[in-house]
Image 1 (cartoon, rainbow, N blue to C red):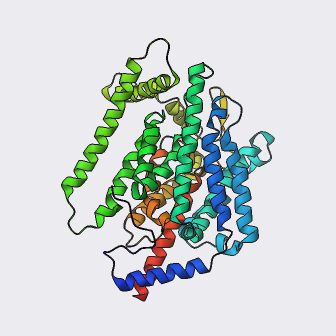
Image 2 (image 1 turned 120 degrees about the horizontal axis):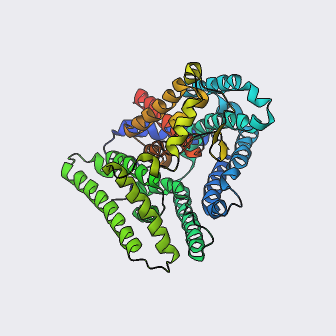
Amino acid sequence: MAELPLPDRPRPHLQPAFVESSRVALADLRKSWHPIVWGLIVYVAVANLLISALTPLRIAGILDPVELRNPLLIASLGLWVVLGNPFRILKPRFLVQYVLILMIVVSAWRGIENFYNPFYQRNYLSHLFQLGSAYCLLGVGYHASNQIPKKVWMILGWATVGAVLLSTQTIISSLERGEVERFYTAAYSLLLPMAFGLLYSRRMAIASFLLLIISNKRAVMLAIAPMFAVFMKIGPSSHARRRKVTEKLLMLLVGVSVMASAAALLGFIAGSAGSDQSGVTRAAQITYERMASSIEVGTGERSLEEIDAGRTFEVQTALDTLDSFELAFGSGAGWTIYLRDHFAQNVHFTPISLTVVFGVFFAVYIYAFLIRTVWRGMRRTSAPTVAESIAPIYLSGAIVHTLFAYSIFIDFFIFFFAGAVLAGVERDKAARSAA
């Protein structure tokens, strides 16, 4: 897996006139932007690292680090609006932005009663904030993605790996001491270093993969598959004049073999454990048991309800709350459901969660937009910035992950990278016109 050249170096297969036009357009964009972009970099680093490093506090029931995300995002976006050019950030340029505005209006109107009920008011504002942050981050990604150099992404990637490693080690130590029984890691944060590592750093990709092996996160493991597939499409080897299909098949075979070897290793560790287990052994055993239970569903030995951690129950309960009108237009902001022992404003299966809150039409559109964005990113004729290069890889994994967890409006990178792709597509159009 060869490392890519610096992101502002043109790819060899491009025509000189097109490359020069693209570089000029990119240079003009860089000169015109406000230095407050570094505020975004600080936010992304702090938020991504804090949520990962403080995950043990969630296991201990002390603090949910995800609660830190919204205040940090509000502060960051506030800086952008106050110190930057708010009209430039907030100006709608694409259909998806108008759709997000419409979603805010419709969901606010549909759930207006929840705003006046103190019990539902927080969830009402949270749903609207999710849409608003997606809108803003789309604009930020559109304008600022070209400002973040490769070195910053490299530092952020390794820092994320370190934060996940620290939190995982802390949880494993707690398992060994018997302080916790649940093995929960911040594995989702590894999608960023994995996406960057596939294109720019083999070591980072390998480190991320090794952490995923003991992460106990089946959804994140599944998300790697489309990321690897997109990388095979847009990676350095894909631009060779003579693509060798056998080489790609071999890469795929190696990937599957590594996953199988990881499962076998986990099984060996779990099977050889005695009564006095170490924290690492216990973590490996938990991960292996979850992987094995998933396989048993495919063979018919277990039902989906037995291993899905209540996901099927959530979906059924959520759909039972809808009538035909709510199915089409959503229940509105502030929708809340009682799930056995707690209240929730979302369900883990994101398509259903979007449907019950915002309606099936909006849910279908959002997914269609993201999938099309990945496709457009894969078809780019040039990607002179790191953000534009890794965007389709990251988005492909993030989309798969949303099928198992509610993350589409929680993961601040999804719409940031979507904005980066849209900026690149527009720049390509301008360069082709000028060539």
